[in-house]
Structures are given as C-alpha cells and as structure tokens.
Image (cartoon, rainbow, N blue to C red):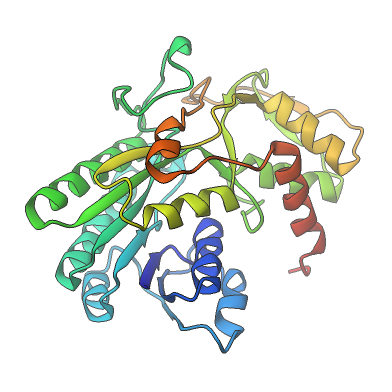
Length: 318
C-alpha cells in the first residue's frame, strides 16, 4: 500500500509511520516540523529497506493538495493539527486555518489523487463537549456539542468527510481519540500530562496539579492507537466516527500516583489553581471499535507509563 501521513513527524504520526514501514508499505510524510521532530523519523529515514519520503510543508499551503495528487496515496492518514485547546480559545482563527482549511487541502488532494480512504484523527475529548456524568463512557451516538474552537474544528472536518464521501466517493473513518500518551510525546508543551509528569519526575522537579486533581481523562497508549489507525485503513468502519479509548476514567491524582510509583519517586505533587475551560470528566466507550475494527486497548496505565519513563530516561540529552 502507498500511504501518506500528515503530521507524520509528531509522536503519534511517527509511531504510525514506523508501523506502516515495518509492514512493508510505502510511506510519504507531510509535516512542517513546527511541533514534530526529525528525531522521531530517524528509523524511517535511516533504514535502506524503507520506501519513505518526507515533505516539509504546512497543511495550510495549497501545495499540499498538489503533492498528494502527485504522490497518489491509496490511503491518507490525516493527523496534522493544532492540538492545544487553550491556543484555539486564544486564537480561533489560527486554529481554524490549520485544522479546517488545512484539512480541506488534504481532502482536495486525496480526491484529486483518487485515494481510496482518509483516516482522520478526531478528538473524543472535545467533540462531545461536556457530557453529563451518567453518559460516561461516551458513545458515538452522544450529541457532538463542542465547547472549544478546537473541538468545533474537529467536528467540522467530520462533516466535510461525510460530504466528500457523499459527493466524491472518498471513504473515511474518523477516529475520536481519547488522551493519547506514549514515547516521543513532548514533555515541554501544554498537551500531554503524562509526558510532562515523566520529564519532571526524572529531573527531580515537582509536578504541578491544577485544581483538586479529581478531573478525569481516558489515557490510551500510542501503540494501541496506531493499531486502530492501521485497522481503519482497511475496508472497515467506512463513513463512521469511532471512539478510540479505554473507557476508564483516571483522575490526575491517580495518574500522578501511578507514575510516581513506577518512577520510584516518593514525593507529593504541588497543587495550583484550577484552569478555566477544562472538561471535568472524560472517557470514551470503544465498543464500536471492537465491532467495526476488531480493536481493543491492551496496554494498562502502569505499563504505558513505564515505557514513557524509559523513553525519556534513555533518550540523548538535547
């Protein structure tokens, strides 16, 4: 299969690239390296047995559609995005330019290339808005009522995917991801509390918990998520939004406790004032993924946390 991955230098995208190359597929990556890293693609670029090309482009550039048309991928995995909810609130135009206009460039390229399918990284933590507690874990039938510009953009792209399938026969699956964590995630950014905690636990710095720490998220390991992307590339889950999560609510306090124990650190986290706009509870029902993709998560939080800590412990100092 010839595949193209947007955002392929990011931590999820590069893990997907490595999986696709290991399975013998030809892979093109589009990434502007604004948040992704060449280091994440070291294996992809260095292995002479791989058929791999990196194209440094911003998805907002119309040249993206031309490149996709020229490369003619069978499947496009669209992961490139502005991923910070708070950035989307502060600058909704920037968020829409990257996450909506950029996605349209990708869809136009896929349409013109005659691609069979687009697998889109949606956001299960934002497209459903703020579900009531009795709706958790959230099913795909729950109304999509996002309360952040980031969530709105992900919903809008889902609507465009439906339209392109109807008008042009371009198939799609939108994977509504829970809170993905794993090796290669940026410990210095605002997103990715597991990576942030890992970096601070290993450096001896205190970890900071905002609010009372009882807010919950559904943490799903990156290898499990990549498996869902690969499964969705087949003729499965066409025209559907599919949740990818564990269905388990984990509080920030419990997350810190697990990671501190795995890291061998006996130190309490620092409490800081709560941040506005945070959804208090989140978890996703992945039953449809089991039915449609034959997928289920297999990595528990302690095992995944250990892998993250090992990655940061062993990576070269920058």
